[in-house]
Image (cartoon, rainbow, N blue to C red; front, side, top):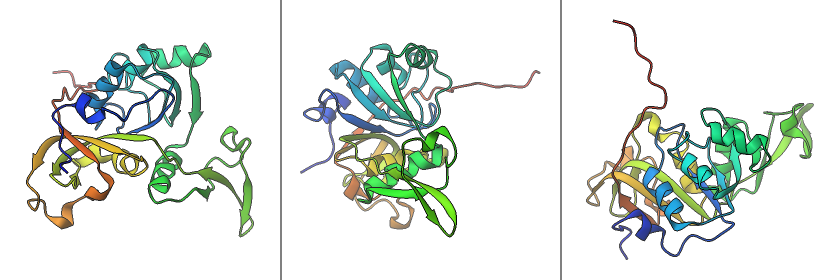
Length: 231
C-alpha cells in the first residue's frame, strides 16, 4: 500500500479525534509541519494535548490551534514568542506541562523506543521535580521522567522516498526525528518525494519504518525574527 497521499487533509483522514495527544516536530518556525497543522485546524479537532518544543507564533504554526481554542494542554520547553499562548496560560485557559528541552526530546525518543521512563539529573531541586520520583545513583539524585507515547506524530522533512525514509535539512531536523518516533501513527510533510532507492542509505536520518503517511507540501518558510545590520 502506498504511503503517499495527495493532501494534508487526506493524510489525516481517520486519524484525528477529540482529546488526542499529538507530537509535533519543529523549533520555533524552523522545520514545522505547517500544512498538517493547518489541516488539524480545519478539521476542528478539539481538546488536544500537543507535545512540541513550543507553540509557534501568533497566527502561524501551532499558534493557529491556540487561536482556534483547539488545544487544551501544551507539553513544551519554550513558551516565548507567542502572546496568545501567554494570555491563555496566565488566564487558566491552557494547561502547560513544562519540560527542559533535552528532557522533552528524550521523552519523545524513549517513547519511540518503547521505553516507559528514564532517570535524569536535569530539573533536580527545581519545580520540574515536584511530584516526581527521585532515585539516587552513585550518591546523586535523579528524577523519573516518562516516555511520550503520542496518538499521532506530525513532522516536516526535506526529502522522503516512497517508502518513507527521511532526510532532514540542517537545523530543520531539530525535534522532528524524536517526534516522529513516538507516535502510534506518523504523518510527514516533505518538500520533495524521490523514488525508492535514490537516497544514499548512509544519509537517511529516519528510517521509513516509523513513517505511515507522506505528503508533498507547499511552504512559506517564514523567519521568526529577522535581524539585519544597518547599511
